[in-house]
Length: 161
Image (cartoon, rainbow, N blue to C red):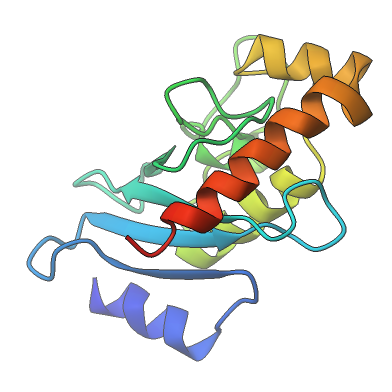
């Protein structure tokens, strides 16, 4: 909504930009995330879509990377799995505190800040991509680093298509 757009313009966050995919659809946003400096993702320009439910902000949007990305907390279809995007309420598995999950005060901006920090510091405990998590734990500076570097290069080539 315009409220969100105006919030975003007042507080530009370093490292991402966001806008509507189509002007007449307020529920679908496209974001570009710049890989954070001093991480393996540095220099990457990753495109993702945010799809907001009709009852936003009571429920969180879903986020999906369109650009290929190799990361423990992004599944192989590009879906982002982090606490802030999980439905509010109790976690039946006990992994997350309720305050780590979705709250109606969150905005596109707070989601982006969480995603940028996820890129800088993956959570290996509840991985969405088990293979990436295993490589990140066991071969961070070998296989994991090579796959991420390939994604970064590819993202630079496709960012502005």
